[in-house]
Structure formats: C-alpha cells, structure tokens
Length: 255
Image 1 (cartoon, rainbow, N blue to C red):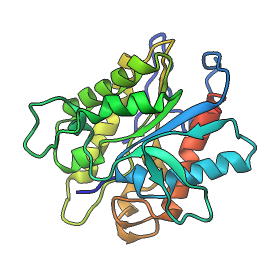
Image 2 (spheres, one colour):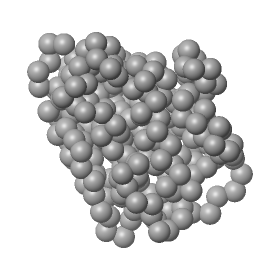
Image 3 (cartoon, rainbow, N blue to C red):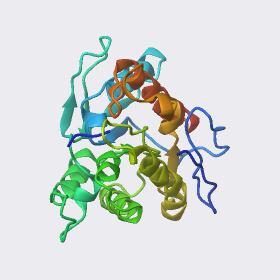
Image 4 (spheres, helix red, strand yellow):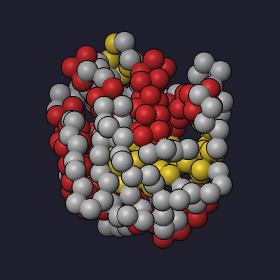
C-alpha cells in the first residue's frame, strides 16, 4: 500500500520549534557549516512520487539559494512545472517501522538492512523526514512509529554526527474506506513534538515542521482540490508542502 494534528513543542535546552511558516525563526543559528549543504528528503511515496521535493528545489534556486544538493538513492523525476529532477530517499509503500529490526508486526516488511546503506550513501547535513503515513494506515502503534524515528536518527547520526533533522507532522490522511485514518494521523502528529524534544541535541538538532497545517484536513478528501485520493498531494498540494519545507529551512538559515 502506497502512502503519504497539529502540535508544536518547546525544547528543554534544545531547539524543537514548529519550523514551518507559522513558526518564528530561532534566535540562534545552526552549527557552523562550510561547503555545500547535502539535503536528503526521506519518506514514503509522498516523498518519492509527488512533486514536493522537486518544487522545493526549484523554489530554493529561484530565490537565490543555490548552495545545496539533494542526495539519496532514488530519483524524483515527476513532471512538476519544469522543476529539476532531484535525488531523495523516498520509498513508495514503505512503513517507517519496516526499518526496525525483526521481529516485525505481521503487516510489515523487513527493510532494516537498507537504512544504514542510505546513511552511508547520503551523508546528509540535513534530513527532511515525512514518514509514517503507511504505518498509521496500517494501525501501527504511535510509540512503535516513534521508535522507528529514533532508529532512523541514530543510524544517520552514526555517519553524520551533526545532521539536522526536520521532522514533519504528516499530511492529512483521508483515503476511501478508512474513517479513522485522519484521527490516527493527528494522534501521531500530537506525539511528534515530545519525541523531537527528547531526541534533539545541540550538535544534532531536531525541528518539527507542521506540514499537516498546509491543508484543511476535513476537505483533504479524494477528488478534492489538493489530492486525488485523500493521501497523496497533487501538484497544487505539493506546492503547499514544498512551501512548508522552504520556510522551515530558511528559518534556520539553510541553505
């Protein structure tokens, strides 16, 4: 099955704002950085198969922010308003909990060997992670999803100790036939700021991005303005998602 609440948290000694358009920029700058920013969009088919990453790259470049490269093992090559192709770690159909080591829940596949390979290949300075839609759709427990987030962060930190993680409160989820999906998505989103607070460090900060708020959840339905299936944003919806990531990056003076 392919994928795709809104709460923010303050940190205790570590930065965990909603780093999206609705958040005030942090007073402190990120750790000193030299060279080109390596940015990895990470997630499921909402990362791999929609226009978001390409439109984000296009918006950065068109506004003079060129000191970056998107890195990943997958190529995003959708037809998106002439936006350039980019690399990412978007993997359609994946649950983030697929990355946990066995034993797995019955609905999960074992992709645990892939995560350290991504980290070693990408060596990112920045991760833009929207992951968990398929998990919510499959009724995976919120705490299990958060445990997978922790594993993702730990594996990338093992290669890139100063990696900066921007974690999305995921987009609305209203597929046909699932009347509880949106509430489950909001439950996960409400838990993300607390998780981010617990994982954020001065060397490797974690920022929350309220991507969910780009849409009105009650109208994010199949065959509506921003989505054809109630899950994946269409090009117009992807532009709203890209704007959230853009604002989050610039709030931290990246790239």
